Length: 166
Image (tube, rainbow, N blue to C red; front, side, top):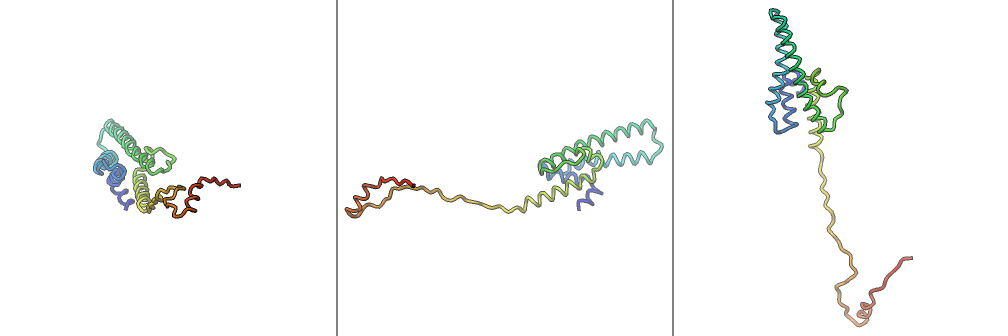
């Protein structure tokens, strides 16, 4: 599921990852940002390469805009990758999160989706054990029984005997 979505609609997978990470953001907002910056940039680069009639100065400006947009989007997406790593205590890859999203955005989205699904599945299955402490108990030497005979009355008077272990 995540591989096909990440390959053909990476913006949708990125939006779902962000929505699961931060519930206050709907999936459509990051999806739109990703679609405009990454997929829109790829489409613009392909169109610029196909139509040779574009002025060279204009194509340089388009190329600079694409590089800047790609870089800006990789910082935006890398920030959420960093939040995911912090939340689930994941190890960082050899590259910073922004570089991972800049060079391999499809792989990064799929990896984040699988980690998120795996971590949520592990945390939702954990059984809870409820442990109640025992009730509070008090120890005392005083008894509530009243002596019934004279012999027991004399024993009750001498109850202050102290026992010392050897």
